[in-house]
Length: 390
Image (cartoon, rainbow, N blue to C red; front, side):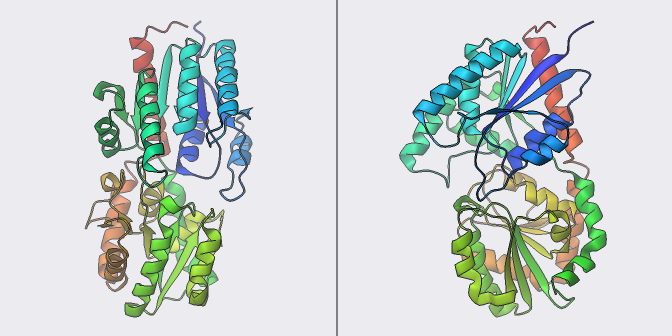
C-alpha cells in the first residue's frame, strides 16, 4: 500500500486575511486519503489584524509554530527560520512544500530546496509591486522573487492578470505559472440574504437608507482613506446614504478621526464575526484598494447579491465585470469613486440588476471546494512530472 503524499503549507502569519483563509481551507478540505497535510506558520502578534489560529485549531488542524518566521526583515531571525525549516523539511520528508505570501515564500522555498524536497509550490496571494514599499525596497523584493522562482516547480496566482504582472517583472517562466482563484464559502453569504432586513434594522438602517460599506484590513494599501473622502462627496448628492467599515489595522485611529464628524452616518465596526450578514445588508460594497491580488470580499459580495465599486488594480478586473457586476474606477481617484457610488445609490434598478448578475456569476465559479480540487490537480501533475514515488 502506498504511503500518502506528505504536504507542508508554510505561511508567515495566521492573521485575518484572504491569503490566510485560502491556506486554511486548502488544508482543511485536503483529500485526506491521498494527502497528509501539515500547516506551518510564523508566531506573529495580531494587535490590529486579528487571528484565525483558534478557528484553524477548532477545525482539528494542528499548527507547527515557527517563531523565527516573522513578517519584517530581521537578518538573525530570517537565518534561524531558514535553518529550522530546512531541518524540519528533512526530518518530515515532505514530498511537497507549498509556501504562501512573500516572506514565507522566499525563506520556505530556499529551505525546501536545501532540504531536497521533490516538489516546491508557491502562491504569492497578490504582489508587493505597488502600495507597500519604497521603489528601492520593492526592487530588492522583486530580485528575491526572481531568485526564488528558479527553485520553484510551480507558481500559482489568483488571476491571469496577476500572472502577467509577475512575468512582466521577470518572475518565473510562463510554463511555471498556473491560475487558481481564491475560493469562498458561497452558501454562507447567499444564505445571509435571508436576514438582510433584520440586520439592517439592528443597525437602525431603514428602507430609505442606502447602506454603503467596506470590509478589510485598515492598512494604507487597502485605500480606505479614499473611501472616507468619497463619502463626503456622496452625501452631498445622497444625503440618505449610510456608511460602515468592517476591519481593523494601523489606520484605525486615523480613520476614526476622519469619520467622527459623520456621527451615526459612518460607523467603524472593527472586527466582526457576522461579516456574511453585514455584507448581505449592504446596497453597495466599495473596494478602494491600491493593490489587490484578487479581492475575496468581491466574491463574498457577489455571493450575497451585492454590486461593487472597486479600483481597477491587480486581479480585480479579472473578477469584476465592469458595468455588469460592478463598476471599476482608477485607484486614488476620489471623484471617480464617489461618482460610481452615487450612480448605484440613486438607481435601485441598476443595483438590483448588478447584484443579481454578480450572484449568477460568482456562485458557480468560486467555491472553496473547486479551488482545492484545482490545487490538488496541480499536485498530481507535479507528482507525475517529478516522478515522486511513495
